[in-house]
Length: 273
Image (cartoon, rainbow, N blue to C red):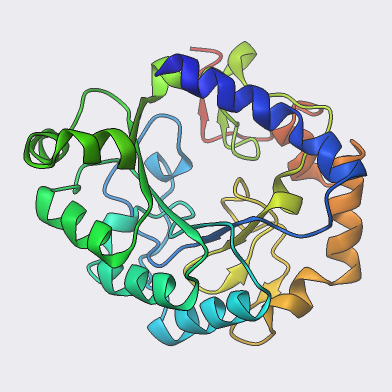
């Protein structure tokens, strides 16, 4: 499995120049956090030290975002997460069925720690229209996932489940905006395409700078108040995306995230033991 993830990393490496010179200024990944809670405290995640308040996105707001994406012709990857664990939300099969109905051309991918991925939940989500599960384990496989592996047909497991073990398969992790440091193994970049390629909404409806802005230091607006397209096309957001693609890191969180500046009071520092 490491070879697959190595290949994906190489593909991602060419995305920034493509977005700068060729691709239009439009996201092709959307992450909508339906629930802010997580049942784990992984060593690579700020949730382990400083968890956020528990909150669920309203179904009305979730469906409104889906409708706005449909009006924009979205056909990319949709995932129900930010830093919350998707399977903690009991509404998830219902919400994913709505996503499939309103966005028939989208690829629905659930990123999960696997602790609650029982056979019944897996079947319910697959029936709701989920395309793929990406299951990341900090240590060994969870008991629930082992039961799921045994219960589902082997071809379903092969086609619809991608399993990775963080230590083995994530060679260069993000430092999450300087909140979790990994020393020399951290992913450092000369340019960044994350805000250009991925639209991220937290459980409160705030549009984030990128998937790594855990504390919302650079939120762009509130989807409870302003339409998605209007926020995406804000001149200051468009300008920031262009600057990051050119390797101009003008925001403190960006300089820290890509290794151009030292992190200020990180939550965890694995690089220094």
